[in-house]
Amino acid sequence: MCNANLESTVKHLKYEYLKMTDINKTIQKWHASFSKGTDFDSWGQLVEAIDEYHILARQLQKEVQSSNSSDLTDDQKKTLGKVATCLELRSAALQSTQPQEEFKLEDLKKLEPIIKNILTFNKDFPFDVQPVPIRKILAPGEEENLELEEEDDAGAGAGSQDSFPPRVPGTLLPQLPSEPGMTLLTINIEKIGLKDAGQCIDPYISVSIKDLNGIDLNPMQDTPVVSRKEDTYIHFNVDIEIQKHLEKLPKGAAIFFELKHYKPKKKFTSTKCFAFMEMDEIKPGPIVIELYKKPTDFKRKKLNLLTKKPLYLHLLQTLHKD
Image (cartoon, rainbow, N blue to C red; front, side):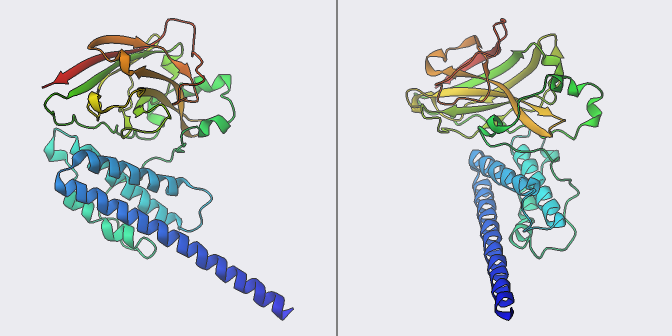
């Protein structure tokens, strides 16, 4: 009996040791990512800094929202959520035209010891911020495994918008520096047509560039959440600066636009539909492109139109060449 109890205790201690080893490795990765982002920031590499801040913010939010993890206490998760908010604030500041409202790099650097020592941190958080609202973050394709939307889900947004959590800012990136003989592309997302446009809660569009195998060629950008809806249209009027010179995009690449919206009943942000534009469609001026049913097929193998009605994504393209 004693041997059995001893064996059980040893197994438990081994499990706890391995668990602590895993969380320590994770914290080391967070700290490395934070250092990488602040280094880019201090060197003036703003696009790379914003990208790294977004990656780390999403990793921290995923940890905060994980119901399976018992490695961190609720207070520690709340602190990580506040760190994620500060990363988003710094990203927004790098794109801001109002310096007086900036969240400065020296402010962000005050968080480094908190991330590094999250398991023992027990002081007041240095900034008066709140964690990003709890909304499940889904990996690409994960929605396929969720139950189908119920018909009444579309009406769940009725009522005051004030009852919903604060909106998360967009993640738009600035235009790249010009290069002789190279072409840059600005896409203005004007509006999207949907039969139930007025019932979409906190809609925004994620823009990404993929190769033929569905591999990312650029950091994803999210428009800010919009609220202007008229009849069958959601209006955006947002400029997206494509983060690669067109001449450097491989043959077969495509620009994807995923419309996302919040489902209060299921408490996560879901993809509503998607559209894409291939390289031969890049021309100055307006263009309308078809909408397809989710899940987003980045390889463009199995495409199903969202509707037979004349409802599209409306874009305006501007080319810049020195």
